[in-house]
Length: 192
Image (tube, rainbow, N blue to C red; front, side, top):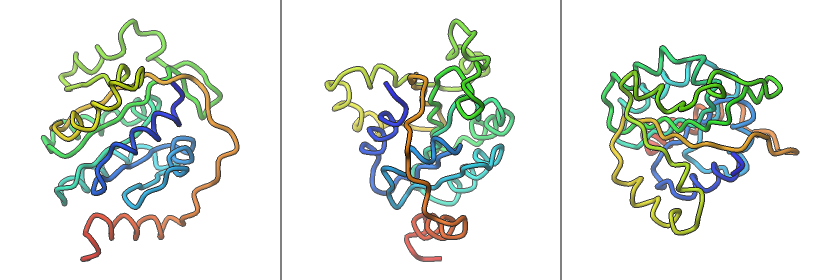
């Protein structure tokens, strides 16, 4: 299934108080088509997303979801270890795996050559749920929200996605300052 469809369906199943952080220009544009108050877009801040998510998750009871491709994951793997060492129960890393660096022209990454990329996470002690099957039929999609409501972090949510980008997407209409103010107000319920 295409990444933009999975992002849309995932967002439909988040609770209204959940925070969704998107990392990478294309993922951000795809998510922006389904904008909601709890979305936060980081188009070019590689290696800061995990640290930012830890800060957010430690300051709120809201659930924090990080949406990223495996290319960004590989660039900030050392920071992601801190996510899992943090033992924050409200942080979830959604890894959208297509096996390539989309933003660099679709060149394959290390995940494309692994027989089982999920084993990478198991071998270093991460807890992982594979949601790929949830996007292969309507029956499973109905079961997804109750399952998500009972998840406890920190954990990786792994989803295989088709290679390819959605074309002709609107750019994100928020400045960086507007985006920051918007997410701070959302997390603090307007009580800064």
